[in-house]
Length: 262
Image (cartoon, rainbow, N blue to C red; front, side, top):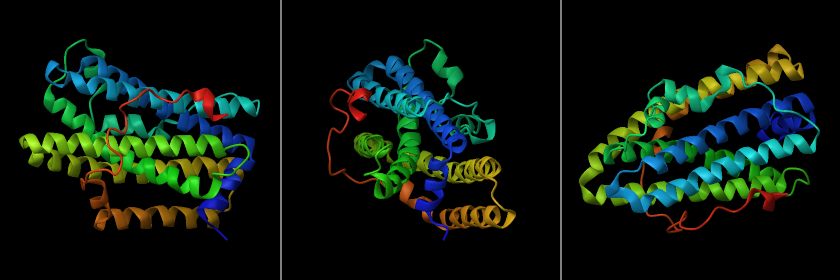
């Protein structure tokens, strides 16, 4: 029977597909770490108290990248080249979602509007990351090879999502509510489309590595398209709602060292 657990187990059991999965994940996390690090360095004076939280966010993403690379190393594998059509982070940037890398490479302070854009983009993408890691946590929290890594990354993603809610609500209280909702909506509608395309690309590459039949590949593609249809019809709204998080100041302390996971 095709299920998320069985599908991921198949990917996990094959060195080539596991190598591709970890390489894609490590690349995306490392890019996120760089982006957050640059944003923390360029925070405008009016938002300087936010800089340590953004830096902590970046440190967590860097740590996740190191964890995925460590999982490869434990199997004696080296990172694989990441196919461009599976590069979720870069495809988002290419479609104008979030802050452009060209802007982040300049040593010019960001504006308050830039910080709102960054937080709205993060609120949408962290929703996706939190959901994906909760799924893995549900099925693989006790896995001898992956369990500790999955639990740590899942907890971090939940913290990132809580932080985005809290900071966007703070900006909303100072009169930015309509701007925040507009940017959230734009980000969510773009993200669901890019996530669909990246998911199809990842499944295509995995199918070739694992030798899936056309029928199996077709069923998986149909599932991805069905998920997109649900999200396009209204599922995207879960990515734009804002509510006070159960955990306050979720990024108020230092990042947990990556060495702790293994």
